[in-house]
Image 1 (cartoon, one colour):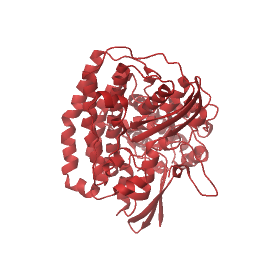
Image 2 (cartoon, one colour):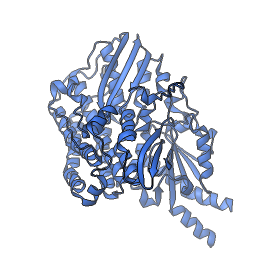
Image 3 (cartoon, chains in turn yellow, green):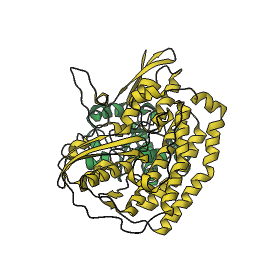
Image 4 (cartoon, chains in turn brown, blue):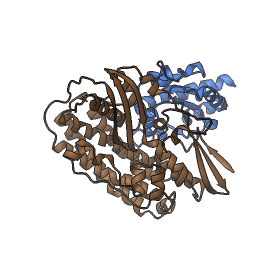
Length: 372
Length: 149
């Protein structure tokens, strides 16, 4: 029997159709239908100056909105052969890590809601509010921050703000271990999440899984290792696990929370003085840039003509993660409710995934299959 | 007397369904933040469960994309009377940045279904969304219920 879930469904927050092929309660495999939130952002951007496009790039995805603007700005900086001043790079690190923190809290809370652990769901959301406060303090907005510009950042951070951010992070750290303990040692949590929705390393490679989902399956791949700011100024080691089940994915996100807090502490301690923005003469040409968004690798390919964007193509991490979720994680899951929980651990973000909808009628390609 | 009781019940238990008809997710994230202990939407008797067939309030986010032009009308007809539609964010009101040449959106939502309240912002703060639901929904639902009977 084919069981359709969505696009509007109590279990899903975003429109997407999940078709589960079931035999009794057992899920044999799954298929995913995209196409509900395609807005044509790349097409709108063509022929516009970057000042207009960076807002559109931010609105590709609301959860990891920050990372999109950073990648967009860094791509154009690479085309123009400029680098943002060191202070701006440090401020970017702080905001990127704050964004990662709130995204991981949200992803974990969604999983706890999906597996009916309301207590942890509430705890995670209340932790997340501290981080949202810190983001608002630094950038002035909670979700779409408008914080990056080509050549730096828009505003400088005052010392008092940075001190307050550290206080908020302390409040997050205070309870973090206890919540991880509840998850790690809870026997019922273990029953719902251990050995459910497993994806091996080979499958993760085949499905191109990235970010915490790939790292939980043993792919030691974190773009922050090779990013110039992190590489030159920060001590950083990617966190990864081997088992690749729901438990490993959630724990991987939990473990990255102290890591991000540590990175923010390092950035605030070693914050250099100086400018926050340079004047950029936008060059013409083509280049690409990758960054580690909360969900994994985000890739921007931009061709500019003077100040105008000639062509832009964006690849977001969700598309690979959702695809590998449908192909490998949801295969042979024991129950339908486990399938919904497994889908939630893959941290789906549909607004990201809807870039272009190309359908080759002869070969039966869909957009998300073009990257194979 | 019966009417009075019905009014009280309608005012104090509001079921909400969120429809994301093609936005950036930012408004949906702020709606999820309403669950958190700080805003605690359930203490006001508002329950979000994303099932149109039981909902009193439809919260529409997102500029209407191609797929949603018909679907949003279908979902609206599935919601039982009395019902209220509230737009969250700039997208359903005007299409925001997506309503430009090259975009495939059909904003505003009010072209397709009647809208009772509009909350502007990109995205609006959770407290604003909460305040808007509380100002508009209870009385409007109760009075609309009386009209229909």
